[in-house]
Length: 369
Image (cartoon, rainbow, N blue to C red):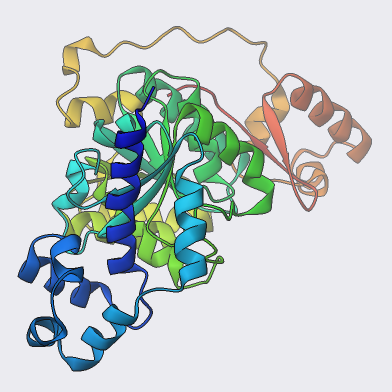
């Protein structure tokens, strides 16, 4: 149990970092200049205006001495006192070491949950919000296997691939870190709030944005550098040519991280971004072991494949392939009556061999990582 003195020291240290970083009108580069000039937030805040102005200019010095919104500061300190919540300054031993390596690490991070995960060996898994059933299954299964192998899975709490990766990782011992594009008190998107709460209990929620920050469009490309920065590498499961997943992959390249991409159908828009990455030098990932071998966590000779369960063949699966199809499309392709096709698809869906996609489409799914 923390002593009162320790709690007071923690609050005072956090308050100094917050007074440095919550002031409107002082950008991250200026905050870093203050830290470089004075060493600690406490030293900067205790310095006279003349010395501050010499380091950062007259107007930023005036703003710093005026301080942040008192209500926001008190709200954040009250949030910090709740169990499981943490404010981590750049000098905090719990601040993730991998993030210190990037060119523009946040000076303050807000975390909820198991902050020891921030020192783990991590792999990011990202992809489309409008994922296919197969993509979600692949993301979840890869995350489960990689978490079992000791890699903490990092993603962005978005719908689709991100959420599937978090759920898969929670099934393994290495768990997951969700990097948010909002304040720590704003769980977004609403549909993922139950997942976010589970991550806050079993994994770690992380953000650089202050409390109350809404889900502004510009926040999400910015947080992508943290997803890649925390990680040894980034796996893109599905993504269109212009997508946030490719922004994360680009950040990974800039940060000297590995980039992996999962191939898909040449006809699927959700595979175009992955294929583009592979053309540009990303490592093709057909199995979780491909990633483990590349990261030095497994030897090629150690790779083994469990024998899949033997299922009865079904003619519709051959006709479907792995492309999304409709009942009418299959009827035209096979010459069978739509009612017969529908009955066959229903049985395959019950068996978990296909999945329904919004709009009356169906797609064959394949398990295993």
